[in-house]
Length: 197
Image 1 (tube, rainbow, N blue to C red):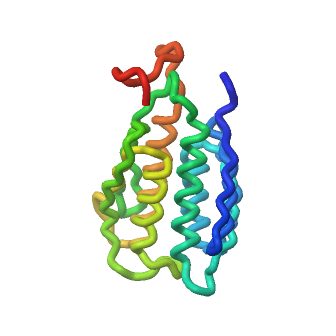
Image 2 (image 1 turned 180 degrees about the horizontal axis):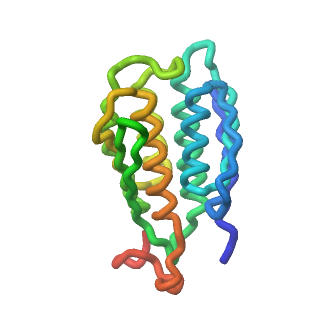
Image 3 (image 1 turned 90 degrees about the vertical axis):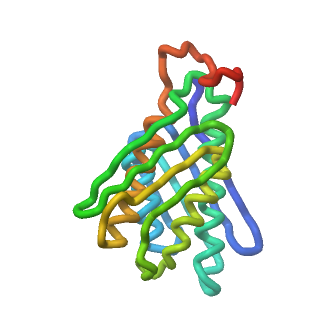
């Protein structure tokens, strides 16, 4: 099997992002975006998805965090799309529940080639680590569309917003881990009745 890896560089007048991804990793990560809480969430994608992931970003944080978070989502989604290649032999879809103390999250992903994001994080509107809560939705939307995936992420219960967001990212990571695996029963076949994704 060819290495399922990708390196994506994205540079604009607002940000410079580099993402290095190995789908068949061991959960190692480097996350350096200048936004501590966001780094913490990105690390969960690697650790709980068992991907090797490096995300380095320099953005116009003197303005706000929006461009950096959005462009990280785009670059990370592009990296997943590139590393997945033609998706031959792929499991393709996965889902997971993740509890964190009083919070419970659910995520489902289909690497279908049809981008869509349905999100209900149920955040209360307070900043988390200095991040406006709407940026978590925006990251997940940008990620799903750049990855060309159908992504559903929901908070099912919870009180603490930190716990809710962290449970959501961990659930998404576990769903991605399941979807990105190779199923040897497929014998390299494309997992679609259409014959392509």
